[in-house]
Image (cartoon, rainbow over all chains, first blue to last red; front, top):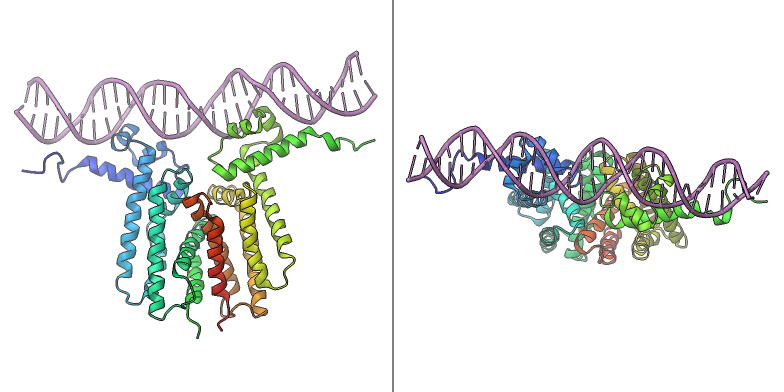
Length: 205
Length: 205
DNA sequence: TGACAAACCGACCGGTCGGTATGGAGGATG
DNA sequence: CATCCTCCATACCGACCGGTCGGTTTGTCA
């Protein structure tokens, strides 16, 4: 006897749903919310509008779900990546590395950043977005504070203030790199950012 | 006898043209390129489509011209603002101040940033945009180098690297502030950015 | 006053947008 | 076999997009 309602293994509905989600993530990552029409997504999936509207109530709902899931992926990946490091300053470094790697290995990773910026302008994501950014702020703030305690960061810097600057800078670097080289030099720019940040944080000899 | 062709003072054509330009700048600044339809602009100006297409060949051309003129305004304002200061570190400070003030006093000022990001994604502005960003990079690079020479900035930082990071951070702060508070806390965030940057640049005691 | 061009009007075009209505294939269930 | 529900295809909708076009108004100069 199997679970009631859902037919577990061969659930083609769930497969289609995930397929739509992944396809949309890629498309949104590449061309943004307004740059992708529903017809584009439908065509890319190989399905039809009828199929789409069976699984999602609207294009906006799709985008929100894409954002939500990818955002969780991000945070999980970061958390896993940071775990091995003992010192906070190393975790901060690893965090930036992790960001680069995700952009390099998963073309749909940047859907988070794009949708975050784009949908926030239309005030459709505001609550979720606020939480998202604040989470980042706090993660980095904690890292900097810890680094200060461990003697790896100068103590005359306000942790929160520095954290918000660093996170904003990361977002800005993404925009600039996308504008200039379609993210072709993203890794290089993040390396620069890291060098600057580390120099700024480093205690005076 | 007055100038042939152009009738100097009461040139209603030129007035309409500028009116369209200003109206569009405001609209684009507030809602972005794709967020504003031609009908919106036409309605806001109080004119009609016929009038619009007499002055501009397309919506895209309008946006490009808006970007170009506003960009020049920016650079001129910055240059004027920086002139009185002798020390490079003061000019760097004044530069950030000037950015804040423009955003506060001229609602259409941020059309530069918005169109820069939005149009670059559609690769319509690429050449002009590259120049624009590179100009910023170089301005800040020169300032940092000068500050180092004057003993106001630590010398173990690469000027270009630091400059690109600072400019990117500025852009990122704009995005974040817009996303969270519709630029309501832009000044405050830039102040934070400045504090961090200055602390990072300051020579160790 | 009349000719002429610059400036402007507003209806209209083809196309695309997000979204809807309807019906049918196919497996599970009685 | 009859029935029901899930899942998807097809055809279609009204709204709106950027852009065009024939015609009208306005100002200038002979």
